[in-house]
Image (cartoon, rainbow, N blue to C red; front, side):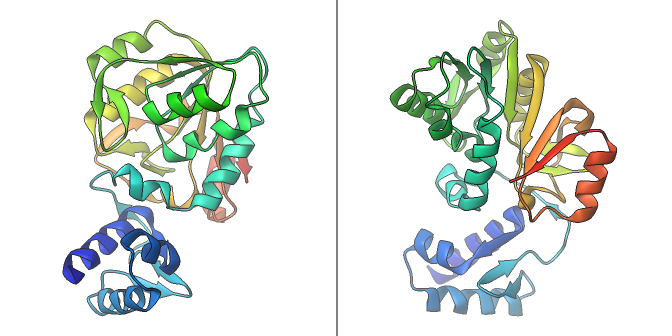
Length: 255
């Protein structure tokens, strides 16, 4: 069990860029002492670098190879995601039609949309549709398709065809990985195809991506940064990335 846990921790750090002892202990239901021992062993094996309260990836540029299960992704950078989501929700005006992507940062927008009315939300993400229906007065349109358990969303040709019927005011888009050279990338062709369809169906695209998503890339290209109009991230976003985004003419907000 300890070897399996360490492998999962190594994968987690490689894909997210950093991780905290407390969130690992809570996720694996073990003590923080056990997690610190795991991190020490993984650092000895040169799989991560320990820092105060957690660990970071060995390299500044990370290759993302798979999508973490949604339960694991929900606990990553939770405070940063909530601040980003609150900043994003402030862009939504009464009467808007918006598309909410299936990313775990995007789902955090729902509590901040309760006071916006009228509002129409289009999404392929089942948790977003359920939460929005329960806690807001918005009209919620859930696109059909084949349910994907890892992303907790509907995907595939049926979803893309349904999306083609819409032109939304604003898309709030998540990403698995982003960098200033290659743009947005992913590791799942179905998710990448749907994200491209989302971008085509929106008048404005707002990317929600915390600092750990930057400097990473998957092997499937989704879209260049020129397809994005605005980026909302957190204060941990490196200064060189901030400068490059502004140079590209993107509206950058740090939450």
